[in-house]
Image (cartoon, rainbow, N blue to C red; front, side, top):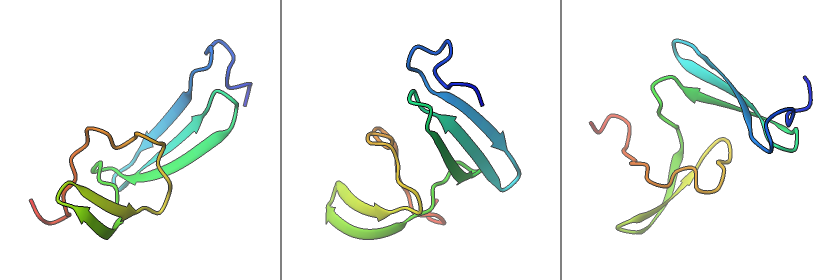
Length: 82
């Protein structure tokens, strides 16, 4: 792979392969480090609810860490709960 910053001026390079069940994501950050992530093609992220801190705050254990702020503005629901 060439230097991830070639022509990107500090941007990320992202590749996505969407399959029937899983979507594989590969990204190169501005420093040339690669990051891999596999998610369900349904756009659901699987995790384990570990705490209910308040009516508006929960703690979730995920199989892979997310970038800070990734979930801002997102809605969460339990699978199978409509």
